[in-house]
Length: 214
Image (cartoon, rainbow, N blue to C red; front, side, top):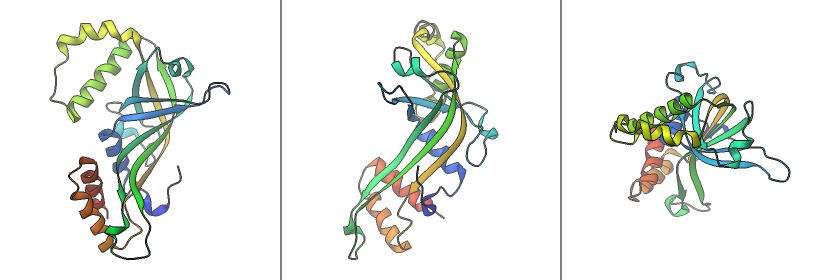
C-alpha cells in the first residue's frame, strides 16, 4: 500500500486499535492463472497474549481467523501461504464546500491497515474450537454484552468440523490514516466539524480520529 509520509499512523497503537474495532478483514492470496486471486471477508482477531510480541511494524504479532471449509479459498490456503489482510476503518467524503476557498478539489478521507503474513492451518478439532471460542470472547468484549457461551459449546462442537481455522504470523503492516493532514489546521477543523454534524457513526468516528491527531 502506498502511504504518503503525512498519512502514516502517529503511533502503532492506531493500527492495533483499527484492527480491533474493525475486525472483518479481507484476506487476499494468490490463486492459479485460471482462477485468479482469492479474496474472502472473514473475522480476524489478535491471538490473546500475543500483542506484547509485536514490533513497530507489527511483525511477529500472531493473528487468528477462520472461514468455511467449503470455501475454495480454504483448499488453496496451504500452511506457508503468504496472504494480505486488509482492515478498513472510518472513512468519509470531503466536499470542497467545507474548505471555504477556491480553487479546491474533493477527496476522500479514509483509514486502513494492510497486514502481510504467513498462514499456518489449524487442523485439530480442539484447536479450531479454541479459535472460535477466542473469537467469541473478543467480540463479546468489544461489541456484545458478555454473552456466556457455556450452554452452546456442544452446538459449537457440531459445527466446528465445517470451520477452517488458521494462524497468521505477521511479517509487516502498513497503516493509512488519511485525515486531511495536508490542509491547514483551521481547514482540517472545519472538515472534522462537518463530519461530526452528519449524524452518521462512520463520519463521527472519522472526526474523532481527526481530533486525536498530534
